[in-house]
Length: 324
Image 1 (cartoon, rainbow, N blue to C red):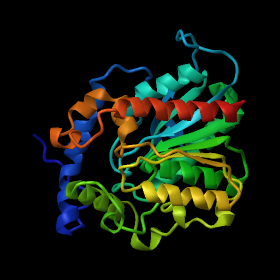
Image 2: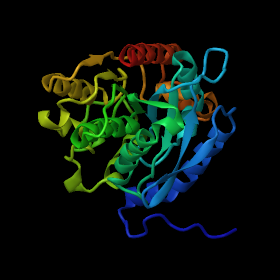
Image 3: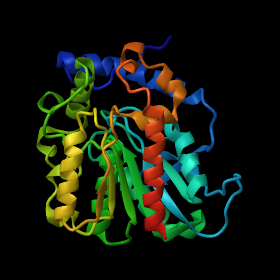
Image 4: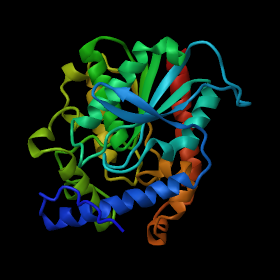
């Protein structure tokens, strides 16, 4: 068997080194779980300036699965995984559901992952995918006046960054941003936040934080949106924020909502009762969830699948209102 190349060999911190050495196996295992499920959209190559990534394009359908013609609204979906794991295919089932329920296109984006591609690589990918599809909207069947973003955890960070860049650049606009259990504060490490997570989860979150961006970058609005000024937030798309009650990130989600409202941005917040971080993605990919250690699953509320359905109902209701 060929010897695997060691990720970031220049990093010698023992805690980070241990995480980096197991990261390729974690990615491969998660990928195997994703590929074991039924697929609804093919993964296709997508060209950006100077690089290529991939996307999962869920075309707009009616409730019977028939493709819809004409220009349709588009939702750009960004997966979670601490900027270092995960892929768009994990939420394949969920994206297909939204595409059918609302008759819109849903585009899952496989942005570049850290630590090989640290900040701002993923931020650039997120915005430039939207921009490129806006430029070629007729080719993709997208209504350029009705686009929105949605993300989970780290993907929610990318959604907020895309919303801010959209206003800064002024080329197009977004109708909505939907943030599920968003990760919005990288300035404070996990042990400095109120949390319910186990020590192992906090160690992983610490690695995510330290390996994604440099210390001097962590107060950047695109890394820690809670640090954004009112000027940076003003004019961004209406927001629906859905923090999970039993999540160390809950408080920063609530704080960000306050900042958005202070900047004049329409913002709705619904804290999902009793929910753990990642519950929407867990419900969307049963195979991957059942591979989670039993001692972890025992800490989760049995109702998380029902609550995930409610979170998606709230999401669809919000998007439908903004796309009308």
